[in-house]
Length: 63
Image 1: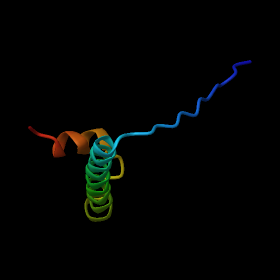
Image 2: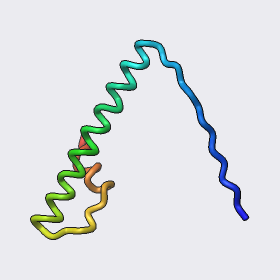
Image 3: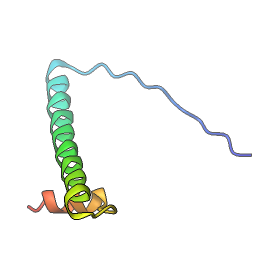
């Protein structure tokens, strides 16, 4: 029998760190929603149902 463990950690960032975290998570949320919208559009229009998020991430992050 395997026992799972969890740890709760509370962070107290400084004002600069909190601003950076908010900016980072805002960008992440924007990219995720854009990829999700594209995935839904592909499944509705083209009929592709197994377009993986990794492939969408590669398409959006061409540096």
